[in-house]
Amino acid sequence: MVRELEKYLRPGIGITTYCPGCGEAILMGLILRAIDELQLNMDDMLFVSGIGCAAWIPSPYFNADTLHTLHGRTIVFATGAKLVNPKLKVMVISGDGDLADIGGNHLIHGARRNIDLTVICANNMNYGMTGGQVCSTTPLGALTMTTHQGNPFCPFDLCQLVKAAGAAYVARYAVTQPFAMIRGIKKALQTEGFAFVEAVTPCPVQFGRRNELGRPADMLKDLMAKCVMREKAEKLSPEELKDKIITGEL
Amino acid sequence: MGLQKVKSILPAGSYYFSGDEAVAEGAIAARCGYCAGYPITPATETLERLSIRFGETGAVFMQMEDEIASICSCIGASWAGAKALTVTSGPGFSLMQEGIGYAVFTETPVVIVDAQRTGPSTGQATRVGSGDIMQAKWGSHGDYLIIALSPWSVQELYDQTIIAFNLAERFRVPVLLMAEEATAHLRERVQVSGEVELFSREKKAGAPPFGTRENDGVPPMPAFGEGEKLLVTGSTHDEHGLRRITHPDIHEKLVTRLHNKILHHGQEIIQYENYYLEDATVVVVCYGFTARSSLFAVERMREEGKQIGMIRLKTLWPFANDVIRDIGSRVKKILVPEMNLGQVVGEVMKYASCEVVPYNQVNGEIIHPKTITEQLRRLG
Ligand SMILES: Cc1ncc(C[n+]2csc(CCOP(=O)(O)OP(=O)(O)O)c2C)c(N)n1
Image 1 (cartoon, rainbow over the protein chains, first blue to last red):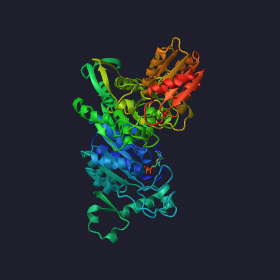
Image 2: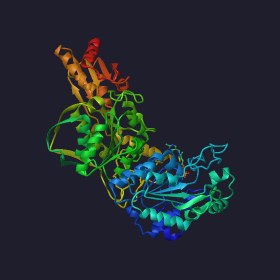
Image 3: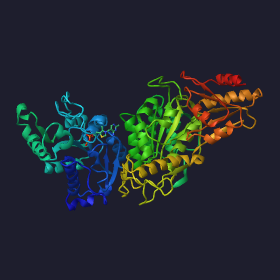
Image 4: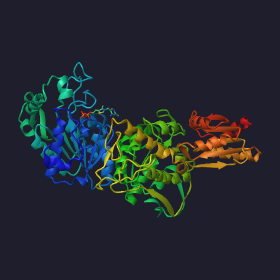
C-alpha cells in the first residue's frame, strides 16, 4: 500500500494476513482510496465486519472504531449502533458467505429497512477462511471442498436480491476495475440509506486452485475478460452474456 | 459516573401493571436507550409497551427479524453508548446464546429478559415453567460466569429490571432476568418511587478498554464515535482489543479475569431473603413464582407450630453457595420445589451437607401452595 494511505492504518500493525494473490487485499486499498477521496474523518467512522477473510479488511487494520462481530450478523450489529448514534458513518465489510449465507436474512431485512449503512460484500465465490467450501455465490458446476462433483445449485445474484429487497443503492464491480470500484464505493458512502457494493474478487488459493484457474495473474486477467459494464451488457445477446459478470450500478 | 440518584421518569405513586409492562417501565426508569426484540409469548407485551413509551421518551425501539438480530443489534447499540434491552422466551433465548457469549467476551452491558414458558421446543407457549435456569448458566459455549436474577412479583420485575441494568453497567456483562409466564402475565400493584439509583458505565479516555491491572477488574468502557479507535472483537484479544489468537497466556488471563470479575464480587451481586430460619429444622429453598406458593405453605405450617423456614433466591447466578452451605449445616432437610425436572436442586446438593429433597412439576401450571404443604408434611 502506498504511503499516502498509511494514515488510515492502525499504527503498529504489520503485514496483512491475506494469501498471495488475494483480491481482498486489493479491495482494502480501494475502500481506503474512496474514503480518502471523500475526505472522510476516520474518527466519525465505524467499521463493522463479520467472520471470514474479508471481515479482516477493517479489523485491525483500519485506524477507526471497528466492531468485529459474529459470523453473519454484521448488519444487525451495525443497525443497533447506527440507530443509537446517527452521527456515525457506518460501513459494513464482509464476505459473501457471511453476508449472504448465514447472514442472508439480515441482508434482505437491512435493505428493506433502508437504514443508512454502506455494505461492501467481497464475493470470492467460496468460503476462503474455512478452506474453500461452497457458498451461495459459487457458480453452478464449480468445484469446492464440499462439491467435489461440481456445485449442483445456481448461485444468488446478490445485487438483484438486495435491490429487490429495497436498497437505496446497488452496484457490482470487480477488483480488476479499480477506478469504477472507487467511484462505486464513494457513491455508496454518499447515499443516504442502505447502499450495497458487491466486490467480485479472486481467491486463487482456495477457489482458483480447485477449479484450475491458474496463477493469481491468470485469475485477474480472466476476471477482466469476464466483466462487462451494464450499459454495454444491455446491447449484448444472452449467448454473448453467458459466463459474463455484469458490473456497474444495477 | 458510578451510582447516582436520578428522578424517576414515571411520577412517584402506585400503578397497576402486568409483569411485562413492569419490565418496560423498569427499563425506562433505568434510562434504557435501545430495545430490540422479536415478538414471543409471554414477553410480547413488553415490546408493545416500549414501542409506545419509547416514542415519548426518545429512546429507540426496533422490532427485528429474529432474536439473533435483536441481541446483536443491542450489542451494537450498547457500544454506541446506549443502555440496551431485549426480551424473549425459550425459543428466542436459545437463538440468542451465541450473542450472549459475544457480549460476555467483549464485556458489553446488555439486559436480556427471558419470560420463561414450558419447553423443550415450542412447548406450551402460554404456560409457565422454569426450565431455562441451567441454560442461563451454560447456554453459550466456552467458560464464563453469568448474572441471572429471579423475580417473584410484578413489583420485583420492575425493581430487578433496574438492578439488571445497574449490574450490567457496573460489571460490563450481559445480565439475565429470568422471569416466568406466571409473573409476566400477572397484574399487580407496583410502587414507583420518585428517585431511582442508577449505575452508568465508567469512562476514562485513553485507558485500555479490555484489561485491568487486577485479575478481577472491570475496565472503563468508551463508546464508538469518541475518537478512541476501538477494536471490539469476539476473538481473544489483549487489553487494547487487539486480536491475539495463539497466545496461551493472553487467553488464560482474559478468560480468568472475566470469570473472576463475577466470582469475586458475589457479595455485591447475590441477593436473597430469609424467612423463619431462627429455629427451622426444615427449609424450603426456592425462587421465582414458586417462592410465592412456598411462603404461603410455610406460613400455614408455622401456624400449626411446625419449625419450617424458607430462603428465597433473588439471584440465581452466581449461585448463593455460602448461604446454602451455612443453612445446610444447621437444618435437617431442605426442600427445593421447581417448575422443572430439577435444576437449582443440583446446586443446593453441591453445597448443603443435609438431606436435600427435590419437588418437580412440569405440567405448565404453577406449583400450588397445597402441594408444597403436602411435601413438607411428608418430610415431617
Ligand atoms: C456460527 C459460525 N459458523 C461457522 C463458522 C465458521 N466460518 C468462519 S468464516 C466462514 C466462512 C466465511 O466465508 P466468507 O464470508 O465468504 O468470507 P471469506 O473468508 O471467503 O472472505 C465460516 C463458515 C463461524 N465462525 N461461525
